[in-house]
Amino acid sequence: MQKVIGGEFDIDLAKIGTKYSLNNAHVFSSGRAALYHILKLLSTYNKFTKVLLPDYLCESVIDAVRRSKFEIEFYNINSDLSIDLESLQKKCCDSSIVLLINYFGCVDIAQQIKMVRAIKSSSCVIADNVQGYYAMSESNEADFSFTSLRKIFPVPDGAIVETSVNGLEILTRENTFVASKIAGGILKHYAKKNIIDDFLYLDFFNKGEQGINENYDARVSDFSKLIFGNLDFDAISNRRKDNATFVLECLKQMTIKPIISNIENYTPLFIPIRIKNRDEIRKKMFSKNIFCPIHWPEPKGLNLFRSNELAKSELSLVIDQRYNKEDMKSMLDILDKFQ
Image (cartoon, rainbow, N blue to C red; front, side, top):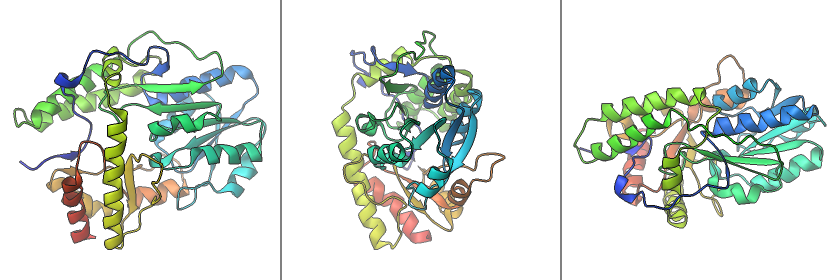
């Protein structure tokens, strides 16, 4: 059986350890739940009336804002995923909450925060580091910064908010979707050893995913706190950087231009590319057990230029810590053959 590349992380019970973490952090069940509770707090200020969102984003962000009852406006994102400053300037005002997205963990989020402050210093700035855990320390000039743990680490749930603002709700109920995510992760680990079939863990992962939106008022699980407390963060970052550097060098030889090419000082989540026959290439990869995701499907009922464009052409190349350069080569060989 060919090695599976991509998909959710498996959980190896033998590597969990005994050290708990996140005991003094603002923790939530998911990134979208973290954003919802930030906005819930800001709604009590009676100062802010609208949230400015980039026109390239995951639909779960829109859902969290809608639940918080704020008005939504969109500002434009350029083709290299930088901010269209003219678009932002036209819409930013004293009553604005500006959400900045650290795309693929490779955005100079500190510089973007400065740009927003220069446009309107009284605006509230939220740094969405869901794809950029390692940039959390660079976002301290934002009013709020949040990240998701399960995007980059082998944990089944969890999100962190960092802020100097008082009043964030402390949640005590553990979320209910984590049980399915844990079961899926453990079963996937044994599927790698050809002990069980893939459909068993995929079913649990899907059940867990369906439960995320029902757990906005729940915290991270103790299970994830335990895993998180025993991770080697430097080793994870270094492997991701090594794989990403290798992929970028190969893309140059293949004359494929990545959407984001500057990864110096960043720890990437994926390497995103534009490719015309994206869906055909994904099918070829699927047949070889390589599962590269899309960021993101078009948000329903909205006509957002950058989201619509990338929903048709973007492919996120997997570069995470589970894999080595041989795995990268297997993925890139298919891309090179069918591009």
